[in-house]
Image 1 (cartoon, rainbow, N blue to C red):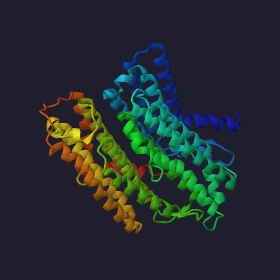
Image 2: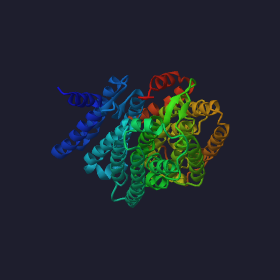
Image 3: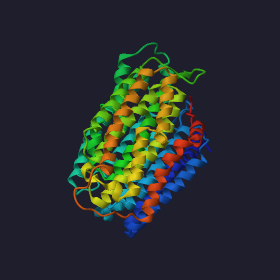
Image 4: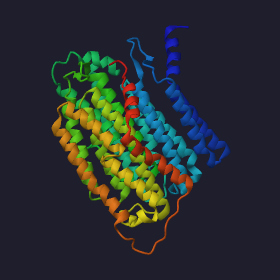
Length: 501
């Protein structure tokens, strides 16, 4: 067998998780076309995600390139860092599919659920490619695959004017940011003569000062990435899309899509602009672009605008959308440290963010199922009518604020430690002050749940046993990991291996 052919088959072995997702996507599509039995689709989807999860765990220690070129660099980097975030994406997907089974909002579209699950698997495939991509062409294809799937999912409730508006706005903003990103990629290719991030690294070593053209190029490319992670000033689509999309898709975009975008940003910085690491784990940067200064500015703007905009919201889903923007700011602050300690903060934060943010959206789904409203004023007295929902929502909101003994405190603590170690005290203080601001609008929800009296006579609302169990599965870890977080830290440290660095 010739060497190129051998490399190709080795690469196919390395992308087994992606192949699994493609296989189950086709299976779901064929099953829906042939059998037309909607009730089995979520279970086929869940089985496919579990199979893919095992395949990722199987290759967790791999540190190789897939689809290598003659320079020994490849289009995809298969490493523990990427595997970590693929697990985050899969866990988010499993939870969101369970949400979809419970959601009454999707009842009007039950005859189209084959397309729904097919599009979710299309998003997963795109996010997997975003997590592993080390070539600009593959990065762009992956971003577009995620975007096209999410555009349709955001407008999945086509008879709902809010959902259609959300989809239209998402497409417009997505198309503009995608075009800007592609323009930046073309300039970067013109500067370096390659699309591979690792090859660019060796070429950019010759830059001994900040380059004006490189500044423009990186800002253009960041427009596409910033749009995926809802970073200011590329966040304008987020509130409207989060409010108008089905709650299940809003929850999915807030965690999985954001995770893929963050990994793409980290891999772009580390693979292309880091010349070496010092003995303390801080990255020695190629001076072609001041990533630290740029990320600090974006981080401050993102967390501040996200939190202050959330203060005035009366729709809970829209409030959580602005909250999601603010959390992107906290994560960008950890990346701005440009160190391994900063990456530890990012990874710890994402595990906990998965639990607390999806938990908060689960409560929104449960309440909407029961009272058919997402407006804050309609939450009056619900803490007494739905005791478990009230207590669980309190845990999730306290965790999102970052107050001990919840897991959210641990997430923010590790970001704060990374900032203090790097002597970025001003950014650390701004992050703390923003957390105080967020407490106000989270407490507003609790005030309506417990202190405001309902407008009319009401009765207690009962929940099924399976729903109560699901709520507890997400709520209890927010307390456990707030008290005992060693397993999370150990998992993160074993995953802190990025290929080629």
